[in-house]
Length: 155
Image (cartoon, rainbow, N blue to C red):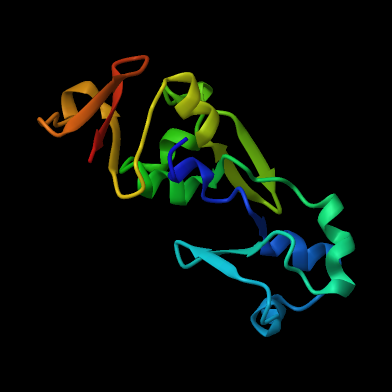
């Protein structure tokens, strides 16, 4: 499986961790053995199995985000307007699976990529758009989706 859908496989959403533990928002900055990841300069995630020992118990009740991405980050990485994941009137909306965690909407990119057989390398550029708006080049791979949409992966 490609890199993008696996981005959060080994991370917890910090907002959920801090909420369940009742700790202050910047507490993770002081946990030197707890690596973190920031997406879109907005969403903070902390690595699984690295919480301080006194807080490890919370991991059992946190939401697994494997295969999921925040919709804003996913839309940026797919070079598509965020509306595609936001409104059920959008043609591809129902092709995706969604999950809300602490009022943040996540989209299951991994499931979508598996269903359509999409393969992406770590440094690939991905574009999801209507067929007429896609630019297919010799070094790209095209995937035909539904409702006049497609994905082009540029390697």
